[in-house]
Length: 248
Image 1 (tube, rainbow, N blue to C red):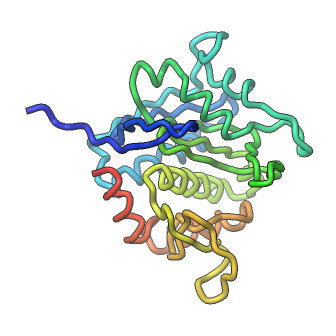
Image 2: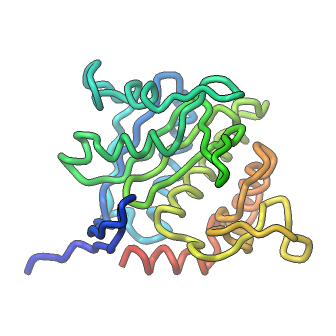
């Protein structure tokens, strides 16, 4: 008997319904200046979250490295970065929405449906609800595509081990969004706690969990990483249950 592939109903930007495959392989790619240790931290984070949700043997990880198949459209990670580059008050940055939307059209996605984990060392940015640019963001996720991560802001940490742990926390956080951890819930910032937080963040967690918001970079991400290492549990039970329910 043929095993059914888990799918979810999703909607594109025009509101058209489509079916989204859930248990897809993960493709990891990085820009040329991402270091071996930064890449290894991402790989470790991907393996950790897959193990937590019980898919470490079912979902294959394909490491493409600094992906480059040519100089044409959709043929290299550099092409995507160039196409998604915008000029803001903070200089040239990569617009996260454009980057992931462009990747949706990648020949790689047509050949084999997958989640991408794209690691770059340039500043990402995104738009606020009022259309203004954020100063920067360090990661973003689309449930049907995958995630993009910027390691740039963690390079200011003098301790290389802290850098790597923050990167590992970041990839687990963003993939958590892909697997709908904390979706629809209101959470707190890592530098707040339940008793003193007056600001809540949509689609984030209020427990000692990597799905809390990390508003201040790198401080909040150091805190998230310290809590993760101290407890030995990146995700709270509620977030784990939500991810497992999503990928069933």
